[in-house]
Length: 422
Image (cartoon, rainbow, N blue to C red; front, side, top):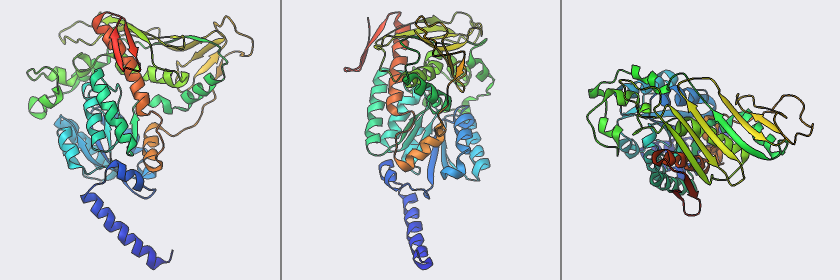
C-alpha cells in the first residue's frame, strides 16, 4: 500500500478507535472486528489472591504478544482494588478505573472482556451479568453454588456465545500438554475397560486458615455487596477474610478442588454427565474459635453411564495418601503429577504385555489457558474449557453438594436438567 494511502487509512482507523472507546462495541460486534492489531480492553472482577495473584500474574506473561490492556478493576474491598490498580500500573503503566460493585462496572461499558475471580457464591451472578452485557468472559470455578442460578447463567452465557462472546472457564488443567497427552493416550484403548477413577487430595490444615491474616476493616468493605443474596448479618471481619471456611459462601473442597479433578476426568475420558452421586463429610477435626462450617473431611462418589465410578476425597487432618488414578482392566493411568502423567500395566487383570514398565505420556503442546482465551477472541474458535465443559463439572459438583446437604443419594436427569434425591 502506498504510504499516503496507508496514512489515510490509519487516520480513519484511529478516528474509529476513538469513537469506539466512547461508545464501546458489544462482544458480538467486537468478535467481528478484533484483529491482530486491535488492543483488547480487559476488566478484572474480583481482585483477591486468585484475581491478582493468579489472573493478573498469568495474563502479564502475554501482555505484548496478545496486545491487551487492563482498563478497570472491581472488588468489594478497598485494599484489593488498590492492590489491583497498583499491579496494573507496575505491569503496563496504565491507570485503571476502580469499581466497588459489578453493576457499576458493567454500566461503564468501557471494556471488551472480563475476568471473574469473585467468591464462589457470586460466580453465577457475575457470569450472567457479563453475558448479558455482551462481554468476553473468563469465569472461575466452581461455576455455581445453586442449580437454578446455574441454569439461568448458563442459558445467558450460551445466548452471548451465539452472538460472539468467547467464554473460558477457569479449569486450566485442560490446557496442560500432559493432560491433553493423557486424553490422546486414553483414546487408544490401551488400558482397556476403565472401571474406577479416584482422586485423594489431602492436607495438614484447611486452606482457608491462611486468609485469617487479612486485616479487614469495616469502613473498607462493601459488606452488603459481599453478602449478596445470603442472610443479612452484622459485619464480620473473619467471615470476610476467610470466606472459604464458611459454608454460606463456599461449599468446600469438592466444589473448589474437586471441580478441577472432575473437569480433568471429563476431558480425558470424553464422557457424559454422571447419573448419581453420594457425598458424606463434615467439620470433623478443625473445631475452634473460628467456627468454620466448610467441611474439612469429605468424600464424594459418582456413577457414570459409561460404567465407571469416580471418587473425590479430601482430608484436612492428615496429608498422606494423595493420589489421582484411572484404573483399567489392562493397566493404570497415574496423574499424580498432572504435568507428567504416566501409565503402566499395574493391577490390570487383563494386562496383555503390551505395556512394559512405567511409561510417561507423550505431551501434546497447546496454548496456555489465558493465552488461549485471548487468542480465541481474535480467531473466534472455541476455547479449551468451554461454557459447556463448565456446565458439566458444575452439575457433578451440585449433585455432591445436594447429597451432602440432605444425606441422600442424588440423581441427575440431563433432558429435564434436574437434580433430585433418590
